[in-house]
Image (tube, rainbow, N blue to C red):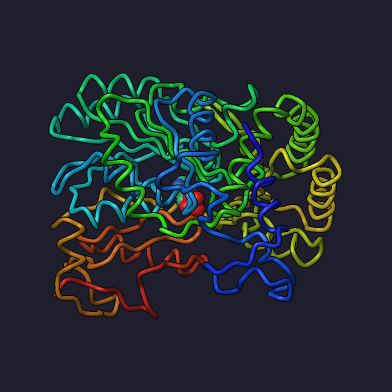
Length: 461
Ligand SMILES: Cc1ncc(COP(=O)(O)O)c(C=O)c1O
């Protein structure tokens, strides 16, 4: 792969007078000089939406590297890839099977496109209440009962690194003539090192979306979409990508994506071993701490991504640990829930960074009194009842009701539980006593529920 940044650098350092966008004109004084390489299409560079030069070359090489029919570099994150993949496959009123822990972008696609969602529920793994793998059997049951299902959407790996058996699921999905879309936003690094589970594309998925920016050295918003399928319409996919991505894509982002892939292709085998060695030591250190639970591969899940450090101290909330790590040790972690913290590592962490993290967690463990019991009981939710399509609920006339008085109404919006951002109640679902109680308890444990406002909930009038 050729260096896209070299081309961008040449342009940035040239005497070419920019009589074109962006309006900051690449002036040195602009925000401390960050604008120098921030350009969109120019004669010297290629066009993301109609690539004919170095971007086309990079995408073709990415397809060869990843084993796809076609790969696309994305500048609006996995979010735009997920929206595009679903748009390419599903028509208005089509049925799509999704896991209850899917990302917001998948539900946005369901709402915009007027789809009928069916759900597969991942089991919760104790004691940290982490979403487990999606069972192929459950997917099969759903497809047998709903043969009209057009697409199956699976998140693998999840935010916490849990992997599902994509090969088995792909076989089932294909047997039922549906299309398998995998949200592998957190698994962009898998194919570059054997220590990680197999990537979803090589396991038989039709369309796979992977963020580059989450787990690989690439700028925020960069991602990839791969397609390897006769049943996914590639022209529709290209059209959708143009709809959901800017028509003025940042070439800094494109350069970063190309450079990241180039680095992994050329130096992955050199970069991963020292990182993995240090990571193994860090995992062993955290696992050895008293009254500490580090999530790892176990018999309840299909596979696990060891790059995620997901752990909790018994009797302390993830929020407590997060605050302490930031204030006492100047470490900002990726995410915390009532039960655990998630520290994200990547091949760009050096041994010094990783050991500093392990030593800080060890110090913190020594500072905090030991407690025996987990402090956060699981909040169990029954299967929710869908009364109308999410799109119809979203477009219906709404009113805001106090949560306490909303029993029996239909939610007009999808409520998301933060962290980690999974849908608690989807637009069109019935509000019952159990969900009201769950919202109240999540609130008590310090979660934010997007979609509710100061104890009020939007309902269909
Ligand atoms: C499971 C999952 N899928 C998709 C996304 C969207 O990715 P991006 O931020 O690259 O748009 C996220 C973001 O956090 C995510 O957690």
